Length: 517
Image 1 (cartoon, rainbow, N blue to C red):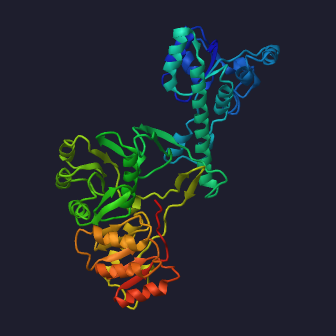
Image 2 (cartoon, one colour):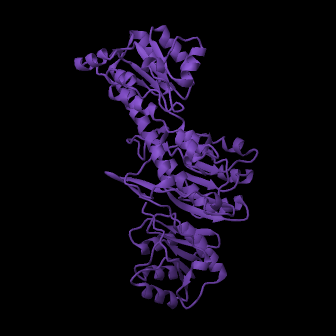
Image 3 (cartoon, rainbow, N blue to C red):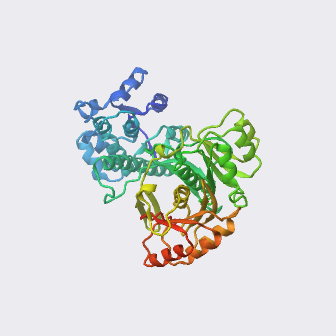
């Protein structure tokens, strides 16, 4: 527990700082400040000493050097419980600083500012601020380190109630200070690496900002929180606007992320029905209503409690159909007149708005990061675009134009389904989806079983090669006429021979889109 006699204040975010400083002054605390903060406090009739008066040295290099001085840092770092420290600063006429109220230059805001140059970004890398914060945090048993306006109230409450700050708060402020500087450095490292570094640096910087604590994780006995990348742009779960319903859950966020990711692959009006990170329905059509009606009916049993993503504004006709079902979440670029009033009658449904278009031209590809015990896996996003021009026909019968269109649609679907996956498609709609099985032939059987309409005349997509011909045999039973798959198995000839036996067309993409969960 410490008393505060002297505080150094230097903040970029001036919100609330004048009132906080006035309260400190009324408690008899001496104030030291720098630059714009000093001027603001002085203009508000506060008695405040400029840092240059303390150091005996003027600010220089356009303010780059002002607090980097022994008169400041020794006053912060001296341990009060070590007589040699106190003797050393006394011999140099250095007074202790008991509170450091400092935040950092607006680096993130500068990066996100349209048209910001690299020189502007570099100038907004704070040097003195992190140095003072880290010094105060290191000496947290003797110095209170205040790094956010959110902390002002609790600090004042303790000072007013007992004239001191207790050890528990000092420790918490210290932890928050180190988190702040670590994330600040991560933001800088991330941005500099994006511009000048390598795809996979020796240490992977991951800046983050908390969005919210969640009610629980995947299961009720797990705690969870949602963090966002401060530099992400384009459509993302972190930027989506919730306009109705309960807070999003951990599992909601996973499903929303995948549903949005799938919808971003399609230009025509498209609806995705998502359940447990796998699509159970997908369709494109002339209108969003038709797309939704078809997509929902692919597997209406699995769609109970689903997440729906539409890549067009939700119209009243679509909303009327949605209102007939139990739906957890609806995502759309926007909602037409009357839609919100209708859907908000369902108390528990979450309605989300991206406020920007959803489609391939707006898709932002970012590295994918997955936590494993003891480390992280980092990989690039799937980037190989499969078109009719890079398909390799490997069977005696070439696919028709209609089959090619359907196979390309099926390929876009397959890359979002948990492996091993097999999907059946007719035209621009899913017919059957077999996800996440240990053997590919079982996925084919499940796709057939889950189909809500005859599979005869459909095409099949497989996210990875067929290790045996049994998957093709199963497709033949389902009436599949054409197959799209990566190829590359040691038994490709056997698989191709099977397709020829059934007069199927088969094409290789030359790339795999395996999703291991």
